[in-house]
Length: 206
Image 1 (spheres, rainbow, N blue to C red):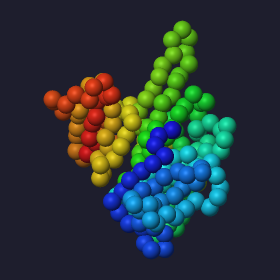
Image 2: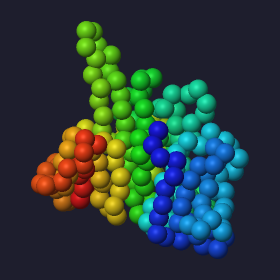
Image 3: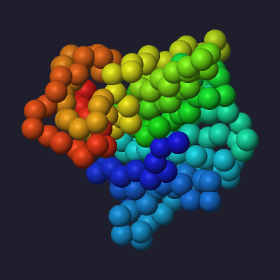
Image 4: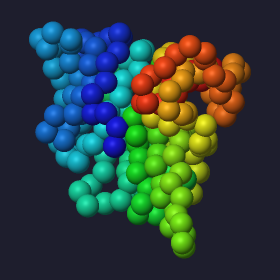
Protein backbone atom coordinates (compact mmCIF):
# COMPACT_ATOMS: atom_id res chain seq x y z
CA UNK A 1 0.00 0.00 0.00
CA UNK A 2 2.40 2.60 -1.20
CA UNK A 3 5.98 3.17 -0.24
CA UNK A 4 7.33 2.48 3.23
CA UNK A 5 10.23 4.83 2.58
CA UNK A 6 10.26 8.60 2.13
CA UNK A 7 12.87 11.33 1.79
CA UNK A 8 12.82 15.06 2.64
CA UNK A 9 15.32 17.91 2.65
CA UNK A 10 14.24 19.18 6.07
CA UNK A 11 15.28 18.66 9.69
CA UNK A 12 13.88 17.39 12.92
CA UNK A 13 15.35 19.07 15.96
CA UNK A 14 18.04 17.52 18.09
CA UNK A 15 15.34 15.97 20.27
CA UNK A 16 14.48 13.64 17.41
CA UNK A 17 16.77 13.25 14.38
CA UNK A 18 17.79 14.82 11.14
CA UNK A 19 14.73 13.73 9.12
CA UNK A 20 16.27 13.26 5.71
CA UNK A 21 14.56 9.88 5.59
CA UNK A 22 11.40 8.40 7.12
CA UNK A 23 10.90 4.65 6.85
CA UNK A 24 9.26 1.54 8.29
CA UNK A 25 11.43 -0.95 10.15
CA UNK A 26 10.02 -3.76 12.26
CA UNK A 27 6.51 -2.38 11.63
CA UNK A 28 7.49 0.87 13.37
CA UNK A 29 8.06 4.43 12.10
CA UNK A 30 11.64 5.68 12.06
CA UNK A 31 13.51 8.77 10.87
CA UNK A 32 17.17 9.00 10.03
CA UNK A 33 19.90 11.09 8.52
CA UNK A 34 20.91 10.12 4.99
CA UNK A 35 24.21 8.72 6.26
CA UNK A 36 22.41 6.67 8.92
CA UNK A 37 24.40 8.12 11.82
CA UNK A 38 21.26 9.40 13.59
CA UNK A 39 18.16 7.20 13.84
CA UNK A 40 15.09 7.75 16.00
CA UNK A 41 11.92 5.69 16.33
CA UNK A 42 8.85 7.96 16.32
CA UNK A 43 6.18 5.32 16.96
CA UNK A 44 5.81 3.79 20.40
CA UNK A 45 5.93 0.05 19.80
CA UNK A 46 2.30 -0.27 18.67
CA UNK A 47 3.40 -2.41 15.71
CA UNK A 48 1.37 -2.74 12.48
CA UNK A 49 2.68 0.49 10.90
CA UNK A 50 2.39 0.03 7.14
CA UNK A 51 3.31 3.25 5.33
CA UNK A 52 5.14 6.52 5.92
CA UNK A 53 5.82 9.87 4.24
CA UNK A 54 7.74 13.00 5.20
CA UNK A 55 7.16 16.56 3.97
CA UNK A 56 9.89 18.95 2.89
CA UNK A 57 9.26 20.92 6.10
CA UNK A 58 9.89 17.85 8.26
CA UNK A 59 6.36 16.65 9.12
CA UNK A 60 6.10 12.85 9.14
CA UNK A 61 2.92 10.82 8.68
CA UNK A 62 2.59 7.12 9.40
CA UNK A 63 -0.32 4.80 8.59
CA UNK A 64 -1.21 1.95 10.91
CA UNK A 65 -3.36 -1.06 10.01
CA UNK A 66 -3.73 -4.12 12.20
CA UNK A 67 -3.00 -7.49 10.63
CA UNK A 68 -5.90 -9.04 8.69
CA UNK A 69 -7.95 -5.82 8.78
CA UNK A 70 -9.34 -4.12 5.65
CA UNK A 71 -7.81 -0.88 4.41
CA UNK A 72 -10.73 1.25 5.59
CA UNK A 73 -9.75 0.55 9.20
CA UNK A 74 -6.40 2.30 8.67
CA UNK A 75 -5.46 5.22 10.91
CA UNK A 76 -2.82 7.92 10.55
CA UNK A 77 -0.54 9.82 12.91
CA UNK A 78 1.41 13.01 12.15
CA UNK A 79 4.63 13.96 13.95
CA UNK A 80 6.08 17.48 13.88
CA UNK A 81 9.71 18.50 13.31
CA UNK A 82 10.50 17.85 16.98
CA UNK A 83 9.21 14.28 16.77
CA UNK A 84 6.03 14.97 18.79
CA UNK A 85 2.67 13.51 17.80
CA UNK A 86 0.42 16.38 16.82
CA UNK A 87 -2.47 14.81 14.88
CA UNK A 88 -4.13 11.44 14.36
CA UNK A 89 -7.32 10.14 12.85
CA UNK A 90 -8.94 7.67 10.47
CA UNK A 91 -7.48 7.27 6.99
CA UNK A 92 -10.86 7.19 5.30
CA UNK A 93 -11.63 6.34 1.70
CA UNK A 94 -14.38 6.53 -0.88
CA UNK A 95 -15.53 2.94 -0.40
CA UNK A 96 -16.03 0.83 2.73
CA UNK A 97 -15.80 -2.42 0.75
CA UNK A 98 -13.19 -5.08 1.25
CA UNK A 99 -11.96 -4.61 -2.34
CA UNK A 100 -10.69 -1.11 -1.58
CA UNK A 101 -6.92 -0.63 -1.35
CA UNK A 102 -5.30 2.50 0.07
CA UNK A 103 -3.06 4.38 0.66
CA UNK A 104 -1.25 3.97 -2.65
CA UNK A 105 1.81 6.22 -2.46
CA UNK A 106 1.05 8.23 0.68
CA UNK A 107 2.11 11.91 0.69
CA UNK A 108 1.83 14.83 3.13
CA UNK A 109 1.88 18.52 2.18
CA UNK A 110 4.84 20.66 3.35
CA UNK A 111 2.88 22.24 6.24
CA UNK A 112 1.60 18.86 7.46
CA UNK A 113 -2.03 19.87 6.91
CA UNK A 114 -3.17 17.61 4.09
CA UNK A 115 -2.72 13.96 3.20
CA UNK A 116 -2.66 12.86 -0.42
CA UNK A 117 -2.95 9.16 -1.25
CA UNK A 118 -4.05 6.96 -4.09
CA UNK A 119 -6.75 4.33 -3.99
CA UNK A 120 -7.93 1.37 -6.02
CA UNK A 121 -11.46 0.03 -5.64
CA UNK A 122 -13.11 -2.80 -7.55
CA UNK A 123 -16.90 -2.42 -7.79
CA UNK A 124 -18.59 -5.77 -8.35
CA UNK A 125 -21.36 -5.77 -10.90
CA UNK A 126 -22.79 -8.51 -13.07
CA UNK A 127 -21.67 -9.33 -15.72
CA UNK A 128 -18.78 -6.82 -15.68
CA UNK A 129 -17.20 -5.11 -12.69
CA UNK A 130 -15.44 -1.76 -12.63
CA UNK A 131 -12.01 -0.85 -11.26
CA UNK A 132 -11.95 2.73 -9.97
CA UNK A 133 -8.57 4.36 -9.35
CA UNK A 134 -7.64 7.87 -8.31
CA UNK A 135 -6.42 9.78 -5.29
CA UNK A 136 -7.82 11.24 -2.08
CA UNK A 137 -7.20 14.52 -0.27
CA UNK A 138 -7.77 14.32 3.51
CA UNK A 139 -7.11 17.08 6.08
CA UNK A 140 -4.95 15.88 8.96
CA UNK A 141 -7.45 17.60 11.28
CA UNK A 142 -9.84 14.68 10.59
CA UNK A 143 -10.07 13.25 14.11
CA UNK A 144 -13.68 12.74 15.26
CA UNK A 145 -16.79 10.82 14.19
CA UNK A 146 -18.69 11.06 11.98
CA UNK A 147 -15.69 10.83 9.73
CA UNK A 148 -15.95 12.90 6.54
CA UNK A 149 -15.37 11.28 3.19
CA UNK A 150 -12.12 12.58 1.75
CA UNK A 151 -12.18 14.54 -1.46
CA UNK A 152 -11.33 12.27 -4.36
CA UNK A 153 -10.74 12.48 -8.07
CA UNK A 154 -10.15 9.82 -10.70
CA UNK A 155 -8.12 12.28 -12.80
CA UNK A 156 -4.83 10.72 -11.70
CA UNK A 157 -3.46 7.80 -9.71
CA UNK A 158 -0.24 7.03 -7.84
CA UNK A 159 0.07 10.61 -6.54
CA UNK A 160 3.30 12.20 -5.37
CA UNK A 161 4.00 15.71 -4.12
CA UNK A 162 6.50 18.22 -5.43
CA UNK A 163 6.05 21.11 -3.02
CA UNK A 164 2.32 21.87 -3.20
CA UNK A 165 1.93 20.08 -6.52
CA UNK A 166 0.71 16.53 -6.96
CA UNK A 167 2.25 14.25 -9.56
CA UNK A 168 0.17 11.31 -10.72
CA UNK A 169 -0.38 8.86 -13.57
CA UNK A 170 -3.35 9.68 -15.80
CA UNK A 171 -2.66 7.49 -18.83
CA UNK A 172 -0.06 5.24 -20.38
CA UNK A 173 2.62 7.33 -22.04
CA UNK A 174 2.46 11.10 -21.62
CA UNK A 175 3.40 13.74 -19.05
CA UNK A 176 0.91 16.42 -18.12
CA UNK A 177 0.28 19.39 -15.84
CA UNK A 178 -2.86 20.15 -13.88
CA UNK A 179 -4.29 23.62 -14.02
CA UNK A 180 -3.24 26.12 -11.36
CA UNK A 181 -5.42 27.30 -8.54
CA UNK A 182 -6.71 24.30 -6.62
CA UNK A 183 -5.16 21.21 -5.05
CA UNK A 184 -8.46 19.46 -5.74
CA UNK A 185 -8.85 20.38 -9.39
CA UNK A 186 -9.49 17.39 -11.68
CA UNK A 187 -8.33 19.30 -14.75
CA UNK A 188 -5.10 17.88 -16.13
CA UNK A 189 -3.63 18.95 -19.46
CA UNK A 190 -1.13 16.98 -21.53
CA UNK A 191 2.51 17.94 -21.40
CA UNK A 192 3.69 17.25 -24.96
CA UNK A 193 6.83 15.38 -25.82
CA UNK A 194 7.21 13.30 -22.65
CA UNK A 195 6.90 9.52 -22.89
CA UNK A 196 7.25 7.43 -19.72
CA UNK A 197 7.30 4.07 -21.44
CA UNK A 198 3.90 2.74 -20.45
CA UNK A 199 4.21 3.56 -16.75
CA UNK A 200 1.55 6.27 -17.00
CA UNK A 201 0.94 9.87 -17.77
CA UNK A 202 2.69 11.94 -15.10
CA UNK A 203 0.84 15.14 -14.25
CA UNK A 204 1.50 18.10 -11.97
CA UNK A 205 -1.29 19.35 -9.72
CA UNK A 206 -1.02 23.10 -9.13
